[in-house]
Image (cartoon, rainbow, N blue to C red; front, side, top):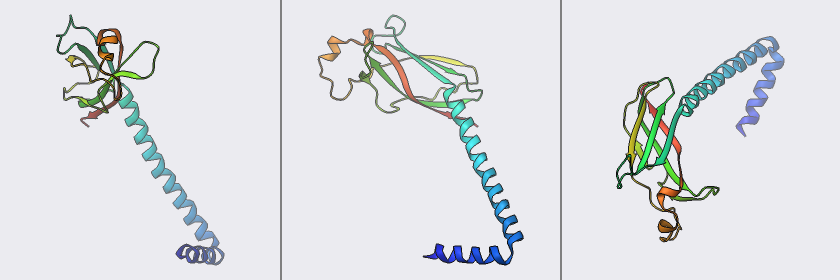
Length: 159
């Protein structure tokens, strides 16, 4: 109900002082556009930095140990220092979309500080079977024979 009163007051002022009210409306629209543009560009540049973090996951028990057979290579292409990264790991059969193995949402985390352009390689455990997958999938689809990838990558930047 208050908005009707506000519209009435605005209409009255518009007819009483049309030039001043139009200048005020244009100034408010300009300030709103600047504020919206600032937040849009800020979010755009943050997302651009986040997508510049690349993670490659592969199975290599010869390079790593039997207990930690996943090789995770992280490349910081963001141009900024990264303090920590959270991510998820999934293993799928070739040609299929449902994961056989999955870590859960951002279940993996590294606090390795990486400068811009730096890479880091480490070994990780194989995640658990996906929810609802029978235990015999571990034998039918061993971790060595699935395609591994990282998803839900969330870096924490220093600045």
